[in-house]
Amino acid sequence: MAAPTTSGTARGVAKARDIESMLPPELRLVDDPYAAAMAGWRMPRWLLRCSGHGLRQAISDALTCPGYVQLMVARTRLFDDEVVRACAPTAPGEARTPCTQLLILGAGFCTRGSRLPIPPHVSVYEVDQPSVQAAKRRLMAEAQRAARRSERAASASGRIVYLPLDLSEAALDAALRAHPGYDPAAPTVVTVEGLTQYMPAEAVAATLEALGRATGPGSRLVASYVDARVHTDPAAACGEGYPAHALARVAAFAERANEPWLSSWPPPPPGGRAAMGPFGRLLAAHGRWRAERDESAGEANEAFFAPIGRRIPPSSLCMMERFVVAAKGDSGGGGFGLDGGDTTE
Image (cartoon, rainbow, N blue to C red; front, side, top):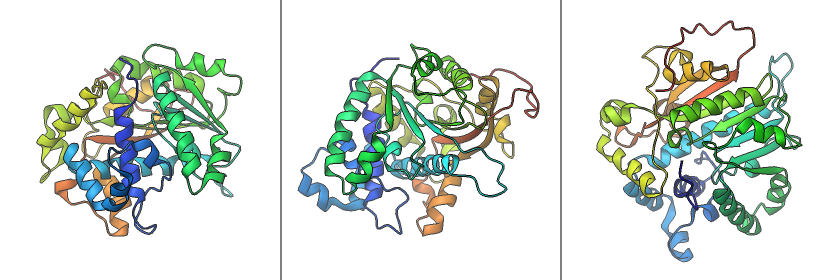
């Protein structure tokens, strides 16, 4: 996997977070005071301030595909909610172990370690290529100086540990175990956001295996993957009314950013359990993760946008990615109900 000097796709996701953060509090799904610095907008600051949410979203969609911003916002919100839930203290009678570590793979310009309300004792580890991390740390320092919530940012960001690593070339579990603060026996919530499509399938499998070895009982994993139908039947992937041909622009953007798509997986069969889908079987076979949910952007639309009166119309409902939530499986071998098969599609 080629190592870009900066992450063009990470900037694109940061732009989506910044666009969403412009909305009034009652309408926004994501609030990221650091996204503007990460986004690297190429326009004068006065024009940036005047452009507004609608115009910025329209420009971004025109450069990528309709609904790209909403897809990134839905993905961000789903991952945010799962991280906060995994790290929160348990309620009386709740059969859950709170996670004490947050591990962000392919972190790019992710700001979860600084902006989410997670308990102060939770350690945060970010893994990405050295060049991307260097750019992120520089931009984050600038953002913290300018952020309205600089006091919170300074205290939160002080606990972030940066682990420079190319996942296609180095052993993740060895790198984690080599760090004196990381506890491979602790319950850990792992995010694999917007990463799997940039890795060969065998590297994804190896990474999941490494995560199985480097996380303790009670761990959680949240991942995204590209729907394989984007390549074979885009209309089926996105649904009726969506201009499926526009998806080619997103793949072309990734190519130009030196971050080509290398892997994708079909969704679970209609009405099938998440664990029985190709990605669910991959999780179970490599690291013994048990997929609990495998959701489309359409489901995220109903969960997040519809309740606040922002339901995305079919013409803008981009469903090129799916989102998976999984739990660490036990070591006893029961409860999966799998029949093996090829899991690295």
